Length: 601
Image 1 (cartoon, rainbow, N blue to C red):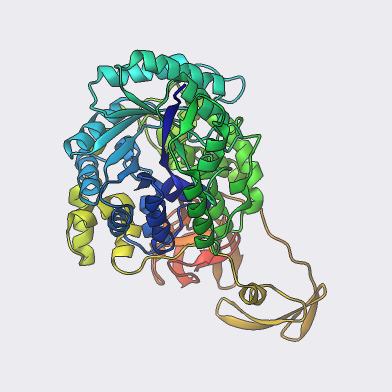
Image 2 (cartoon, one colour; image 1 turned 30 degrees about the vertical axis):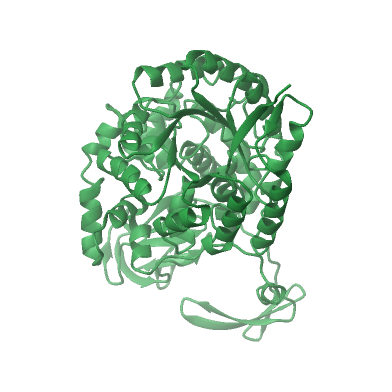
């Protein structure tokens, strides 16, 4: 009996990197592996888009368009290179107007992309109509998506096979051009039985010969089982990765799936011996990168708090950046309530990021004391219609905290009328910075904003996390008997740590050192000194923008600077009226909770 050949897309160089390294990988380290994979017979790669577009500018000091060109060269002219798009959000967390959505498709076509997988995290088909048409008009293949997840136990009203068929029927009725259909479960939480029933119903609804792809992650430990269910129901393609970025928070490994299908009526379309050689080369190429332990394990609690693999490690990397990793378990636990009350948007970027940010705020500042802008705008309808109505109490709190009324139009129309969005303000930003107004730069400025401009000016930051050399690690550790010079408000102190004692300028104090995890007021903390009122950091983060300068007069409530933490901006406001007498930080500085930022006298 002949076996059905199951085809797959290799996700290692996009979703694999996002799910394991938070997309913080230098292209020079993996492009030789792309060439090796090509030589091993692989010809369908996920090559960019999603979080990897912004991450190259934000953390790697690389231009995503240059990387796309290099990927095409490495993969060869005949490879199917696929990128990921988020409907009207294209490759960012924020939604975009029509001119940027169309520019996205045009630029990705220009830089070697074959196919764009296009999804909306709310399954609001209005967000797929123009974006899908733009992809097709640019001469690209359009893989339209229905996004999936399992609701926390006890929830109902969406995310069952009937809901997915209703979404698929709306896509078909809207006349969106497509070349294939993907059912995308970024959190890896959908039960295998639901996957089977969904693909089976889709096969009946779609025209004969329609290519169906199913995407999941191994985060909850059921990825292989779900793939087998999808295949048995009639899926043509699945997504697989390669070690060291397979399993755990990413897709199952090519070799694992090959093994799982042995003895069945299905066969994976691959030469496993050649793939084994590629994986060995790949693991050696990535050996210097820090491999987060949470990226390689199965998390049994994910079905209760459906955090997708692609967002999980990106967020834990940011928690490590801010010395907050000890809060991770509390944040994940807090996600369940945020999902339950938020309208059941699928936990895939950007919605998964909104969930995590709101859970982070609930842990750090108290439940619903501070509303994450993305989460608040979502429940207020600014990103489209959620699968079910959000909790009315949360809608009310969000409107009050953000000072926004519920949306009265669809996202693309709201953004088309927003003078702060689109090609015109992007051009103005480039002009003010003295940068060339190319299509690529316009798209970078529109989707990456200030960080994109900083990159183009040669001021991009580096945030790639590699394993530290032992000698470097030792030099960064506070060791007994070592002396340090500590500068506080411009004054230097000689500090020596000595077995529970700290000697400061010759005076001995009995001390202990531990991490601080207390966060008070969500906007700012202040205390008085003879030199004025100290404005302190309410949480760890990076100084994103300084608004007021030394000598400026400020009133109570005026914003002095903005901190960025977990992709959120926190305004640091003055607690008194007076004059800014000292700025103790600069833009780009990393600060910790309770650090003094400003003196107002």
